Image (cartoon, rainbow, N blue to C red; front, side, top):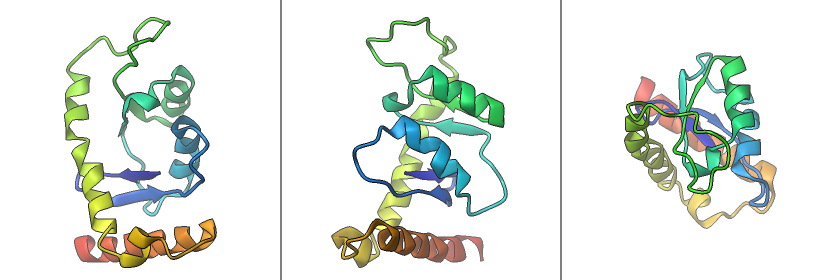
Length: 134
C-alpha cells in the first residue's frame, strides 16, 4: 500500500500480506507518513468504495475520491462527476511503483520476512525522496 502526492513522491508506505482488504490497510498506511503533510484527497480504485472508509477519512480531513462499484446497494455518495476527473490521474501512483521497480531487491523480492521487505521499500522511497526533493 502506497500513498503518493501529485508528483509521485511517496508520502506513506505500508506492507502487509495479500489477504486483508485494501480498505482496512488505508488507515495503517496513512499512519506511517514520511512527511509531515497529509494529503487533501485520496484517489483510489473501486476497491476503496466503502462508506466506513469515507467517514474515517473525513474525520481526518481527507476527501475520498473513488468510483462506486457496480453493485452498490446504498445511495451514491459521489454524485458530482467532476471529482472523478481526478481519478484519471491515478497513473501517477503507478509511476511511483515503476520507480520502485528500478530496485532489484524489490522486484525479485529477495527478502522473505515482511519487516525486511518493508525496510527495503522504505529505503527505495528514501532514495526517490532524495532524488526528487534535492
